[in-house]
Image (tube, rainbow, N blue to C red):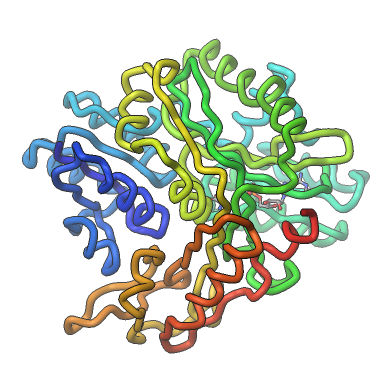
Length: 420
Ligand code: AMP
Ligand code: GLY
C-alpha cells in the first residue's frame, strides 16, 4: 500500500516508524515531514494545511491510505476532502474534529450529555465576560474557543490577570478569531492523565495511559509548552479510575457525538484531571497527542495499519488492539529559549545505536547535515520493564545526543515515580 501521513513533528515520526513495521506498508510519504523523518519516509514539501495540495498529491500518486495527524488540517476538513476523492483516511471529519476546534462546542456537549467536566460559562461579549469576572471565584481558568497553538488557556490567580486575559483574547485579538468567544471555567486540581483512544464511532479502545509535562521548567515551573516529556503508563490511572472513565466519559462521549450526527472516527484524546471528586475532562483533542504518541505507540504490539484501517472501516470491535505491559519514557530535547525565542541551525549528533529511539520534531537537512530548525527538536524514548528503568535509560541516551543550545527537563516522570 502507498501510505501518506500528513504532518511533520515528533508525533508523525512515531506514527511513521510504527506504520513501517506493517508488512502491507510499501512506501510512506510524509507531508511535509522533516529532516529526521526523511530517514523513514519520503518527505514531500506540501504544508499540512494546504488541503488542495494534499488532495492533488494523493490523487496523482495513487495513495491507498491517508493518516491526517495534526489538529488544523482535521478541523479544516482535510479528511472530508480526501474522502470525497475516494481516499480512505484515518482521522475525524471536520464536523467531529470540532470537539477540539471549539471549546464552547466541547463544553456544551459535556453539559448536554452529563459528562463530568469543570463548571463553566461561555461568552461572546467582552463586557459580559469582564462583569462575570468581578465576582467569579479565584483562581479561574480562561480559554479561547478555537485553536491557539496550545497557548489559549490562561490560569489567572488574580482578578487583574483574568481581566487581562479576556481583554487580550476578546478585544485585542491575541489569537485571532479563536478568541472571539471564550470559556471561563472552574479551576480544578489533581494529577493529569492523557488517554488516547482508537474509535470508529461505535467501539472505543483506550490506548495505554500517559502523562505529559507541559511546563518548560523542572518542578512544573515556567511557561506552558507543547509538552517537554511523557511517561506511560500513568500510575494515577488506576483500574478503578479507568472503569469510571470508560462508563462516565469515554463511551458517553462517542455516543453523544453519534447522537449529534457527528460520529467521531480516528484517535480521540481525553485530557483528564483526577480530582478529589473523580475524573473530569479538561480537554478533548481530535488527534494523537504530541509527545504522548512517542510513548504510547512504542508500546503497541498490534499492527498499527491494521488497527487504523479497522477504524476507517468501522470494524474495530472485531480487531485486536494489544499493548505491552512494559513502561516507556520520552524526554524532549529543545532549543534553549523555547517556547519564546531561540536560535536554530545547530548541527545535531546522534550515536547510530540511539537513532531508533529518537523521534525528530524540529530539524532539517542543510548541506547534508541534520540541523535544528525548531523549538522542540527531538524526543528520546526508552521502553523498559519498569518506569524507573525507562526514565533512567531515556536520560542516559539523551545525554549522548548533542546540538547547540540544547536543553531538557531533568525531572520527566518524577511525579509519577513518587506515586508508585
Ligand atoms: P489545555 O490547552 O486545554 O490542554 O490546557 C492547558 C493546561 O491548563 C492543562 O493541561 C491543565 O494543566 C490546565 N488546565 C486547563 N483547564 C484547567 C482547569 N479547569 N483547572 C485547572 N487546570 C486547568
Ligand atoms: N501533549 C498535548 C497535546 O498533544 O495536545
